[in-house]
Length: 409
Image (tube, rainbow, N blue to C red; front, side, top):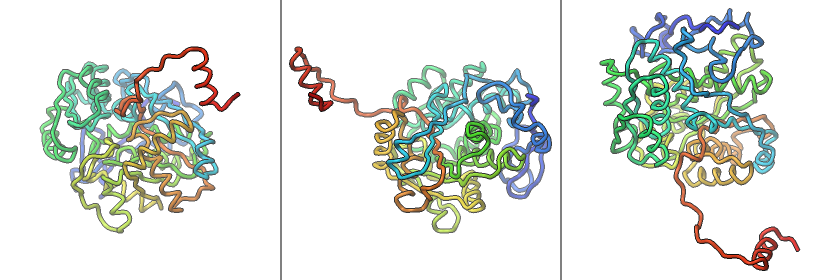
């Protein structure tokens, strides 16, 4: 496959108006959100057999960066699709796989969208980037901007975990801590985007940014031999990961790369569940005033137009939306670590907690092949440490402890 981008234009998801490729965040006619459209005929002719390279830019043909010299990378993508038989047995599921995003350069799925966002900032001649973040997006955009030689102005949630703040402070001199939650600042920040003081690296409007997360779907499909799972569970805050993954599967199906599109499940924290509420009520999204959730990356009470897009995709495709309480998320985190050895952060494991609840409610068929997107490593979050008091041993006491713990004589 040629490594050139097959992006041809931008199209409005509401009125269908077509716009030339460029830095445009909404439709000129109706102010609807825009999505990138590719040459699917060419994609069909080339097929997946011609893919070259590794990582995210292996899929350069379906990403919107024209010049290879402007494709920023820290080695993101090519994350494992892990078969989890013990956890599947525990949940009563025929087959369970986890698309684990922890191995990405900053430990999160955000690196996929940061790669295309910062590359697009270079492509359109910006000198600076900016994002409002509850944690992961800030550390990722800061790292990729530094890699590209761009300045980044990062606004970070005051309750962001310490490892993420340390990472941001290390990679940008322009870190600003904001009071309140994401929803309190994003509307004000969005108004500054219109002045083009910086490149928009937010999750709510920029088609070039969220396009990088579409590679989640491409990797899942390729890692399953182009026969993707029946169900894919993805987290949803503003909606970037969910929308991008759904678009990726739809695109591959239209190009004849995969035989069907998986059923998409949107996973939210119960304390930030505006999309779930709307889905169940059958109406539009009503913004919520939210507080703290341990899944800090899902802490958005007003997902805006991107959330409305995700809701529409759910309804049009027969998807499912579910939620999990903080306690369920933390329990799923412990279960995953002790059952499969995967230490994921609360935001990262929220989709698994939602799957567990939906299975208990019989909202999903356990006989199907299910994939869960686990979006972050647990090494970027804070948790109470185990007891540090040490014990002095002699040979006899050490033997007693081993026998007691392992049950051997």
